[in-house]
View 1 (spheres, rainbow, N blue to C red):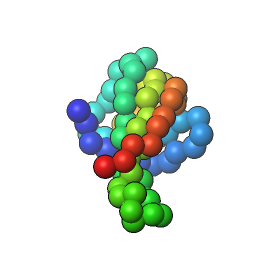
View 2: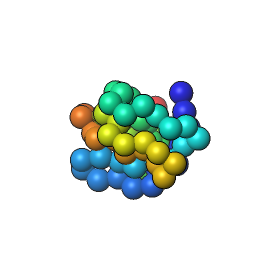
View 3: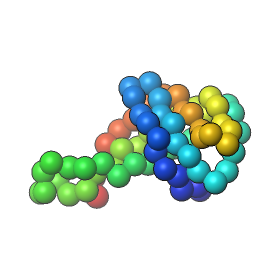
View 4: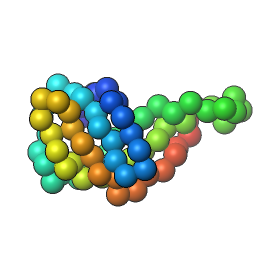
Length: 72
């Protein structure tokens, strides 16, 4: 498991930085805290599954295969 900092995200992928260079071609799951406009719903997490397409000292790029929001 690796903690990182999100650089940017769009509908097709995301770029993040962490302390490790991750292997290209690996499938990974990324989990992001997501703000919820409804207090009754509680905190949300955006769970992203994807393929690492690039990883170097500048960051790791992930192509999104699927995603889902999870509560709690």
